[in-house]
View 1 (spheres, rainbow, N blue to C red):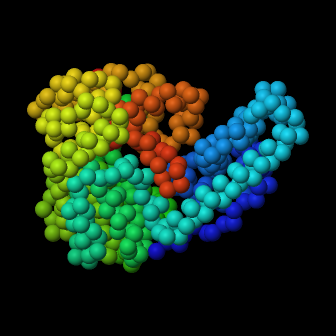
View 2 (view 1 turned 45 degrees about the vertical axis):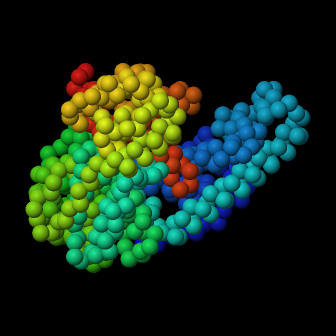
Length: 467
């Protein structure tokens, strides 16, 4: 099993004060003692391309948000002094956080820094404890769900497979778009890791075929995609030397690692039977004791080395429970769960999108619009209907998240758009209300904003194609 992050002592208030003073100077901030923090490493695992100074900034910003919940007075003082770069004279002149003498201001600043340091230490202890309990949890994506409905039996199937690595080394979860394959895989793995410590390493890779660039949709041929998948697998295992090797040699090097110790590799969003046919011979060389968990829309070819679990729509009881839960969460009134189920069925994403639109439109108008005979036509209607009520800023933000790999945190969005916090909040709000963006919170409270694979596909094929 991978070693947990080295336990680092909590920084002293003086070290935090030094880091705050360097907040607007990236070179100095990178040299801060905070660079060794587990909180900072957590952010760089989510975005390895993020500069160290930006990761420290994001961690500090998160702790400031916690202080703001507890003491807005202290948070405003620190925000003004260090985030906005105001001098003491400017703060006193503006009466921030209140009208007071210079001496009293410095006393309050010292107290605010002390409380900030205590909150940082508390968050650092939680992160280190989380990693100590099971470091492989950090390899999983930030969960985009709070609760799953109607999946207990399928989770049991996945857990049975996970506990038998030699019998079934490769498993595919098959299901139509929006059915919850990714959420199910994540949910089952979290249950597995909570009670099993036999894995040496876990790797999660998105096998997304197309990406959005400013010039339009970009993709790659299947042989190139497979080569890139093994490049990413090598990088996540610390084997950067694979990048320069032909595919066959990549697999040989990986086999030495993966057949010696038990790993679990998730390949999320395989999209065609041809992906399976081209990929399976290579995976068979790497499997056992290592296991491969795949999610796909299409049925895997009949191969003895691969097992398959089919994820079907929710039954009526589970679907009605999800509809009612979503309506309550979205504060939607007048939503008849039975009417929604009759039209939408048990597809979780369709339920979420349809009920979410009832925040903006009367429920009967939304339901009338989705009366259609095909899932694809229903999704097209739902997405176009949502797209039509978005502001230009909200539309632009969807593209920014798509270009970031379908998920980005606040800091990333702020850097990419160069918008103020208020502008960013205004653009995010309707996306959240319509469930086009899902805020996802990790163990230490850091938020990322994700779009579903079908939303990403809509942007690529429908919006750009339509333009």
